[in-house]
Length: 309
Ligand SMILES: NC(=O)c1ccc[n+]([C@@H]2O[C@H](COP(=O)([O-])OP(=O)(O)OC[C@H]3O[C@@H](n4cnc5c(N)ncnc54)[C@H](OP(=O)(O)O)[C@@H]3O)[C@@H](O)[C@H]2O)c1
Image (cartoon, rainbow, N blue to C red; front, side, top):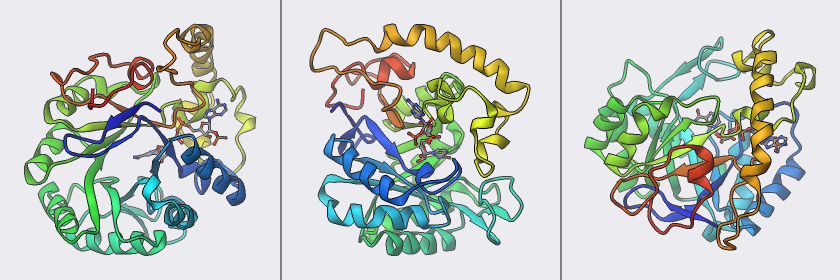
């Protein structure tokens, strides 16, 4: 398994991670038995980076992962997130009725204890601020996260969906190991500034939704395939009118994918199939011998690395 370092000081973890959100949340019906088998299979294959969040299924995703993580604790690099809250039984995502963001120091501490309890573990390997509230200075949130590190409840801290300026401010308070951002052929915003900032600071970039929430795989060819409770139906990418245009783009990807996915002559570089990519980490600092390429395809599966690059 290709590995990457999680930030400048973090451990080596599998370059391909397993995002667990869809096992409890957002993408229609899920089957806990199958999900548990999937978690074990991923670990068996050397995928040791598991990604969850307290908001995924209102805690149910962390509860699902708990037994597997406890059983195989030494094999797992466990990342979870906080900051999205809900007043009731609503989605909990930004912009949804009842949902709000709370990155206060008090909630940082409370949310961490709740996640540890649901997971049934003593320490979270990587704890992300999922979304930041504009009302709370990032220094306050990161200060509270740093206290969690000192207390031994968290090993590394991360941020999700922040600007390069926020990353810099946070990093000046406590080293940030990773930033999690959407990155795929559909969402390339990080290429403007964030990737360069991560390289400069030695922060890993964890790409979420790397196959465009399933659309880039070519498996979804009609909006009717999305179940009534599949949140993707509300995402502009899947909206009526946009969807057909995006499908044509996917066709272009399908045309070149077989060439890109063809087995490489080098046996130690197995490549990164679209199916397998759920969270890929990207090279961080320049000057570390790492690749400077920025496309998901070229960076997540092209080389075995003992450094962030
Ligand atoms: N930080 C954030 O704000 C944020 C936001 C979104 C997601 N995330 C994290 O990132 C993870 C990955 O995001 P994502 O789940 O949206 O990623 P994604 O990999 O882009 O999409 C996953 C979806 O694609 C489907 N899929 C993948 N390969 C397929 C194939 N070859 N054929 C058919 N279907 C395929 C999966 O189906 P199967 O499940 O059947 O394989 C699943 O429904 C999440 O699980 C979560 O941990 C973070």
